[in-house]
Amino acid sequence: MPKDGSFKDFILDQLNGLSEVTASSMFSSFGLYSNNIFFGIINDGRLYFKTNEGTIQKYKDQGMKPFQPSANQKLKNYFEVPGDIMEDSEELLKWAKESISVWEDQK
Image 1 (tube, rainbow, N blue to C red):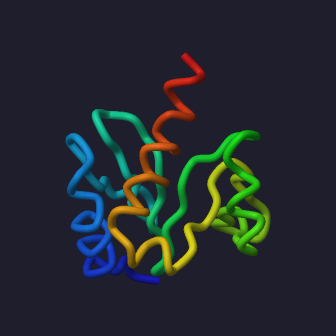
Image 2: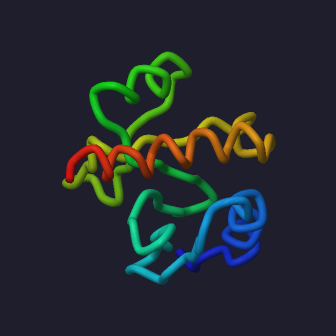
Image 3: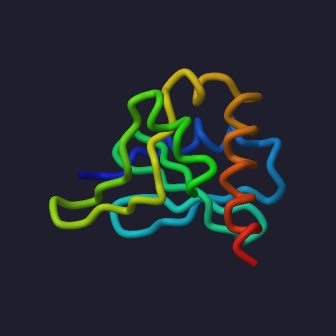
């Protein structure tokens, strides 16, 4: 399936409050980075953020599922972001910053 550049552009616009946010092509998806920290995936009109045991429950509570690029592969630490969160740029920024902090906490 071809990549949807308009959705990627929408997400980047919603995240314009992040420092140095970029989207890089990766396979049939885009990887989201802030200051070279990989924190999200855009795939097939959906957005996924990096999670950990402290953040994953709020995704599950809203019925969100992990990123599954194929039937045989599931990335259990990247969960879909709810649509209402994507529409609210302030709330999306909070979720994105939390996702970025997952990596910072691993250092």
